[in-house]
Length: 145
Image 1 (cartoon, helix red, strand yellow):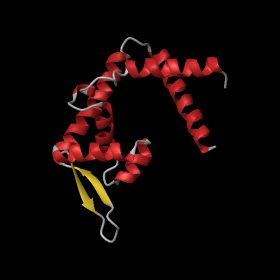
Image 2 (cartoon, helix red, strand yellow):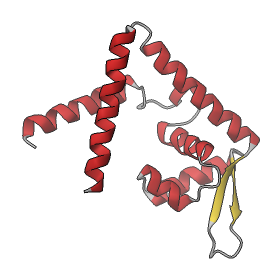
Image 3 (cartoon, one colour):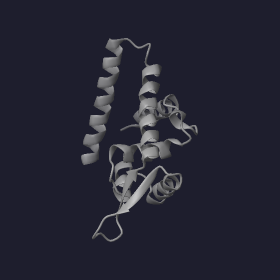
């Protein structure tokens, strides 16, 4: 990989994070940052995940995730349940409030993409989705090496 390719990939990453509006507080109309929203959403789609699995899944720092989990628990969005027979492993579950908040994040995310892409014709949207799948598959294949 040459310097020009690296610069192009980094430019796309900068553009895309701004396009998704992840840099502001109140991501997707919530009171959460992007990382807090993402942690809440991951628990929503993986009820019963433990903190270690969550860190591995999101490739996030354990202490940072731990602070986010503590904040979400304090605000009543999630609960931790000890796994019997384990050495302190706790599974993470959303409370009803947390579930509703995560559901709203999911809905707001769909609405955001729909709104941002509303002027793209179907043909270009298909090409965009194919390109995104290609990027994802290439990156996943690289991670296996």
